[in-house]
Length: 377
Image 1: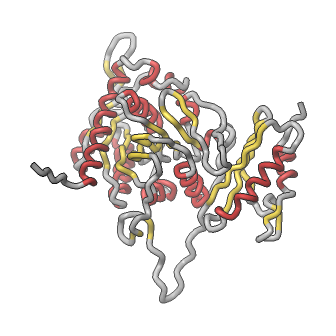
Image 2: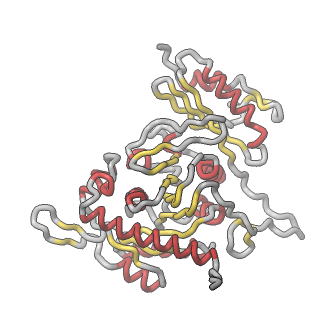
Image 3: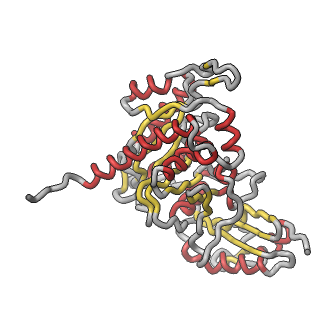
């Protein structure tokens, strides 16, 4: 079989011209994210959102060009609409309203996602606190409680859900517009990790990330699911704020470790959601303590109880604590998170109790949004 290279792909795409701009899509810098594996070629075609609907023929032409190369057994080109940075308002003209429900919000900016009941963000103020581990086990625990669950891996720069769920492959699309998410352990998942090589860094500007996240959320055939867990990027940057302002989140779960520096950053993440009027369901204390597997002695390596105290101080619920344990780490790294691999373990039970509280918070929010019921006797 002829071995295909990235240079071959770019050479083929250089023959595709964007007539409106008078140049080929490669020289215009529209092509990125080329990955090649076992004859399967994936590429990303970047475009500003105002042109994206008209560029479907260009995307299809690029896909055909790749498919026609010797050695290619399958080709997929994804059209990613990214927003250009807002131009500063001219003198005497007001800046455009911002999306969201905070000051200056545009009503209805958080459009619903067809088939998705409630969207819950799992967030942290900083990286390294085990947010993704909590997110995947929370999703699996909700599924075991009877909910239909999906996961959106919104951490574009460090997608971890493909590995944690033990899923590999590429999303398919029957019409070239809507992608079918992959599935394992009873939950469906969409991640940029399915579209780019695991070792390849995602070097995108903020608006491009925002566009990619919007596409992974709204151009995916989620089916009918009760709860979509969004594994948010760590921190409170542009991507996080944009997700909070434009996605119809039912609420957020904040993950922290017990030490003061992590709680300081968790407080910033919590306040970001409050600023855009997203309910915060509560705080999870991850790596709360360590039980020695040999002697059973308990060690509070990062301290203990800090998240509970912070939750009380900030007026939100404390959702539960998860120990620091090698089994949780190994099962997540191995693609069979603890809730799936050992559902009767104390660790899985900790995630189940957190999932019950999140499920109840989602139900309470939906009931409050529906308003009071009038009973006629």
